[in-house]
Image 1: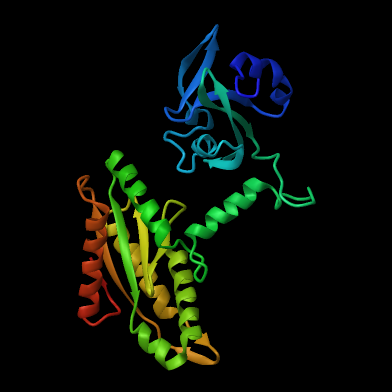
Image 2: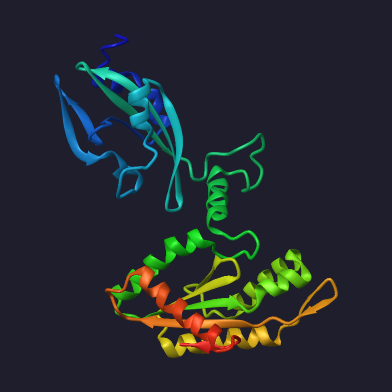
Length: 296
């Protein structure tokens, strides 16, 4: 029986697991097809293994393939949208072929980490959310990092183009930032970046708008649905906010200005790289024209 387990045997003997798991199924890990046992024949159900957890493509970290290769049982937490799943996989032999039994349980609100079940913080789903946030947030300025920009900007562009709406981006660069670092030190430089990011956040319109740290002292502001006029108004608010703000650190009053480059488009054929390059060119026009200004 160890090497000749049939699917009906699994179904008859794993009934206890039905209370522990939402889905018990057999899959072919190579084709990713869900299988049924029909008499003496294994047949495909017609669905792919990843559909059950709301995915539209194969998981990048497929543990079923790993279980097939290593002949071992594996478990993982898979996070899709706002839900978390515990997936257990174990290899079996059926009709001289190695298949995988998958046990799937949604654990969004029922899987905890640690000894205490008090509070929401120890939910694994919350831990996963925190880890995800760490990968896309800039720890210094508490805005999106370059990875966040690279992942979010293409999506927002496609959404705007699909609705025939414009989209605008603003590149912002701190003027003479190297001089600030050289004169006052990197701690003060970090303070300036953090405070300036706060100024930018005050000036965006709603939850659709976002700001990311593009690199070093350069920031990207994305304004979905905004044409050039609306983007210019936001850039002017940001420019004024920076000019009015007092940047004081270690009793030093630091003069801070910034340059802005704006690009707006409704061109569905434009690539992300081209869009960023156009805004970057406008930014450098602002810097070459004397800095502390907006070019669009």
